[in-house]
Amino acid sequence: MSNVFVPIFAASLGASFFEIGLISALFGLTSFVSSFIFGKAADINRLRPIVLIGLAVSGIAFFLQVLAYDALSLALSRALVGFCMSIYPAALTVYIYYQKGSIGKFTSFGSLGWMIGYLLAAVIEDVHFLFILSSVFYFVAFLNALKLRDIEKPSMKISYFSVDTFSRNIGVYLSIFVRHMGAVAVWTILPLYLVRLGATNFWIGVIYAINPLIQFVIMRRMDGLDNEWLVKWGCITSALAFTCYLLAPSFIFVIPGMVCVAFGWSFLYVGGNQLLVERNAEKATATGILNSVIAAASIVGSVAGGIMLEQFGYQETLIFAIVCSMLGMVFFKVRNSSSLTVADKQQTGSSLNE
Image (cartoon, rainbow, N blue to C red; front, side, top):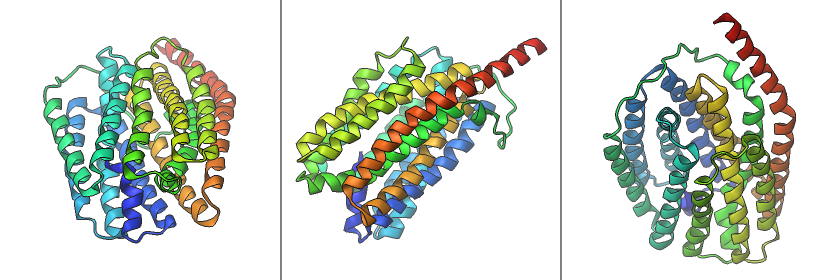
């Protein structure tokens, strides 16, 4: 919930547009490292301890943001948050899969949490109080997670430096990376863009809440849909969303774009995750790499957003996001078929050896 006001808070601490981009990039960098490490760890070790540790340290990290007093201290605290909150997602996703749960419905509850958080942010507005409240919610999640039982799952021997999983799923990873890179460039500057269009902090929170609200509704109804279709149309719908932002004459006209981006990310994230858990034996590693790819896109997109806003302007940043979304669709169509062929050959070979 506090994330939406971080760019505005950073600006109030004296950060330039470029420094705001760097703060977001540092968050993405630590998230990338954490997702990579703990995604593989979840395939090797038990899932429950990873989930519990991730939630507990995230609660501590969010609280420490209250102590930020300048751009540097905010950057360091955001880096810690990025690392901590990326410990548990892959383990929790795979936990749901092994429990025969719906990944779409599971993901939708995350979106519901984002929506409630944004609405609270709209009402509260005080970023320090939002940091504290975020911390409290993480500790509540930790207490609820204590009820999770250990489950039986295959324990795999996986090299931390193996690139087999990445190369086998390059179509999914590349398309999501390129689309999300453009999207993060927009998210980095969107609160400032909305202020420029006349939005107050209250309206910024309300507008941001629309995205996860629509996601919550959509993600619960995606079981059985073709995952490749979802990824392609996730990119196309994202491009349409950023076009709406570009053409908006006032902040109210950003709302249709928020609806479109909700469809786009729902299609892309659920479709991509389901492709990965269905195609790969090392499920936590595959989903962990996806989270790392998203984090890597956050790094590049944050820096790109800060630089483009400082050197060019809001419209050029939005055009960049539109181009990235369409390139993501093209890369998926080109690379997914080739990577799927390689995966089929490897699966056939392993079957013959059994």
